[in-house]
Length: 204
Picture 1 (spheres, rainbow, N blue to C red):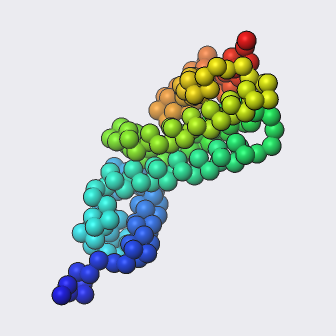
Picture 2: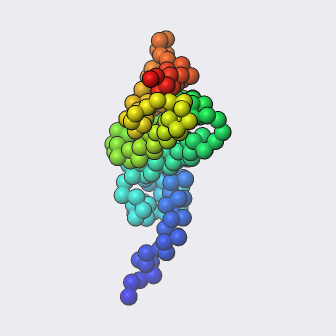
Picture 3: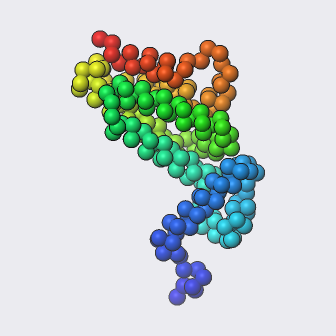
């Protein structure tokens, strides 16, 4: 018989514990930074052993990846709300680009320690971010399809157009580029680049 102290926690307790670990980790990472926060710091704040933290996450990197994914899931909810909101496809596409740029600047430049969290996840395990990038492109594709359907756009391959649009706009939402290119006097503004992309979708 398994001793009580070795019995795995019920699934709902495990989910609650994972959520607690992520909540505390995000708070400490935001305050002290990823590099200066150890698993021992998290364990102490949680009132548990480091070994117990490692039962739920194999490494500090796994924790930061989970936090980054959570942030991107929150962003995706914003994007879905824009997709399902009011306005023509071109109006919603403009709103989509501009809002993503605004949120990115707000997150990556005003909260530099949050920028570090995401940069670590992107550098160490790009696969943790790929789902978000696909979801981003999916929303753009759907808006392009809707624009085609109502005659606003004239695009033969909506998916390829969405991929190109995302890659064209990436410089205004990418954490590293936003931080390091903020003083570029010739960089395009979000509205300017979004309008350029939208015009290209209308070309016949």
